[in-house]
Amino acid sequence: MAQPKYRRIADDLRQKIVNGALRVGDRLPTEPQLQEQYTASRNTVRDATAVLVNEGLIERVPGRSGGMVVREKVILTFHAHRAEMPAGPTGETDAWRSEVERQGYQASQEFELMIEVLPPELAKRLHVDPESAAVLRRCVRYVNGQPSSVQDTYYPMDLADEVRELLSPRDIPQGTTRLLAERGYVQTGYFDEYASRMPTPEEAALLGLRPGTPVLLFIRTGYTVSRPVRVSVTAFAGDRNEIVSTHGDAAIIAKFRPEEEPQ
View (cartoon, rainbow, N blue to C red):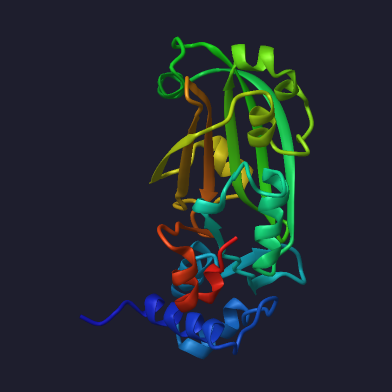
């Protein structure tokens, strides 16, 4: 069965973007020009460009000088095995920033502190009573000025009462993992979970997600020898991120994948 015409038009325009005939920042021909070029109706052209908008390849720019513009598509690789290593020379924020810059992008973030009632599934992970209060430290992280991920890290209130810096409304220079280790709460084990789902309305707004775009979830629970001390829930924009993890001898892997050079 032949493809619908709008699909054929979308395929042709996509190929022009992929092979560089249309570059980031270039404007597509106007709707009337596309109608003439492809001998297609206005609705068919609109359906074709809607496909590329949903794929994140183009965006609508308002105004007289606007139109359909080829969008920069940034795919950040998140190395889960490198995240939040307490023995590293830098804090979590600096380590993340270095990771982004290593991949050739610009990094920035916004920080927020809140006191929240724990959802039941997080209370269970932290081994505290349902509806217990917790400190929520949130980082909205940007790559090339575009929101890329939201990291929400929850700490039990009794822990925050002992480690008061967790209540600071600012980023912690050495990172919370090292801070807790310095105060006797060395995280000796992590349990990581990976999932994908459609975003909550808040996530969609924070990440500027288009309808139909999922989030990738990376959930890490950190344990000391005596208790779980935090749960970090990172929601990555599904169209802008990939998650990888290296196991075993990283030096061997790096021989065949130089981009995975051990850190």
